[in-house]
Image (cartoon, rainbow, N blue to C red; front, side):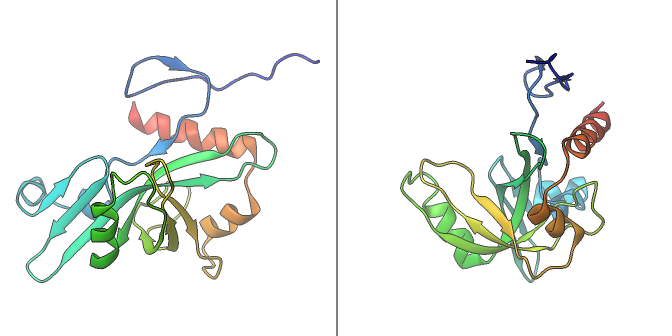
Length: 175
């Protein structure tokens, strides 16, 4: 066996430890929440690690946290994004009422609600949201009919080099 490849190392923003496996690239909130003023966040919005609601005068927007796995063609690991999707009131209420049900498996329609740095206008890509047994976060699958570059990369895959560039780029924004 030849020499071991140089591994990307990073300091975890959650635990402060150095890791050499790929981190999940996560977003703490959906973009619409980030666009709110501090006053609005405290008066019309609720955010926790799994759910977000924004109650405007004429509508309520509802979001859940999900995962998107990006295929990496020349590596044995996928790149994981922790993103948010918006759901209809009916789907949101169903998901929330079954949140602690380890056997709940179903699908919903949702819209991606985070702008992923490598893609312009990535928010608002239509997705299928699939819940999983065991209370893992739901996984999303972008609709193939969308001609967005993120969708193309999702189905075609990206390289390990590109993956590590994305990870490093997001880590640099956290510093």
